[in-house]
Length: 266
Image (cartoon, rainbow, N blue to C red; front, top):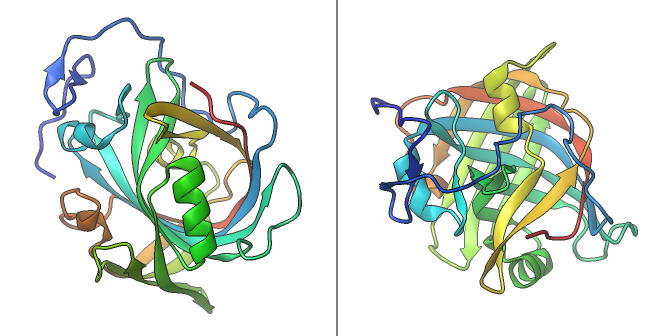
């Protein structure tokens, strides 16, 4: 994107400027399988028919948007913003079957890539569109996640996946996305960037004024190459990020995985 990569030893300060590196654990390696147990199961769910679109961003553009104690995670000196569209399926609590009213629905999220002082890599969600108002309320109130209620659809026609979202509440009204990808051949062995963008084993969020890490585990991603045929959206700009410039650097599809989340950790 025409930005000079930041030095890896420069940590963004709270306003995006560099600050002196303090004591911190070594950053854990990127692994295609979970690097640690998730602990007692808090949530179960499945993610189906995922389209992963990613654009590079300078770390300084991302740093002010991360929870306290987190910094942008980088690959080759840049970080990324992801626009991920998929179908959520059968959310359950404490290992129980899917909950009525929360079960299955389309979702589209805007996410950033983070790491903390303990070296844990994760994601930070800037927005998550969903069609289930009950799921929106539970996720916002119980987990501090910025879910929004939207009118959405996911459809497959041949080898093409079509995703549509129009935000309802809360605002800004008019936030939307229209995505079509053509699904290609399976990825036999994902490359370093593909692993970096998809092999994420937790999320950072803020609960009761404190930054916490919510770990997850799932099988190794089954990934496919994908060709982007349509992408009209303003969700990324609505999330407080620079609007993407040019084509994404990575477009992938996955049929999905079952997921388990453990309880929040400091």
